[in-house]
Amino acid sequence: MEDNTYLGSGLRFPVQVNPATGRAVMADGAQSVRESVYIILMTQKGERFTREDFGSRLLSYTFMDTSVTRMNMMASELGQTLLEQEPRLADVEVSVKPELDRGCLIVDINYRIAGSYTRDSLVFPFYLNAESGTEPGME
View 1 (spheres, helix red, strand yellow):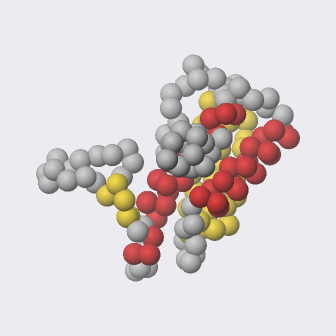
View 2 (cartoon, one colour):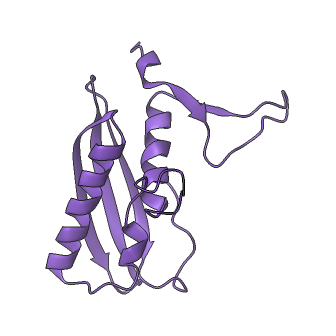
């Protein structure tokens, strides 16, 4: 069994309380990294006034032109943001695929956890129009 103690632990996102113990549910290891990726993506830069550089510009792409060039720019920017803000990541690859009939882009993020051979991914629909769907969730 792999020792993931170096990955740390934190509150599970969204915050949950264990009804049996009354304590907050924690995420550790690879789950902690995955939730950190999601939080970075869904936090708009400048949203946290104490850490204005934290987060991504993902939400600023909501009404973007869906040209191949723009989607490649979006993927490149998201990959760079994740590498800069989450030191537990390595080999981050982001691809964006249009599903315009659903009014969304499929954002596919593949990464390796630094210092290990563990690979993981996060895939979610990014709706181009806020009325087209619900808030993206972790799959």
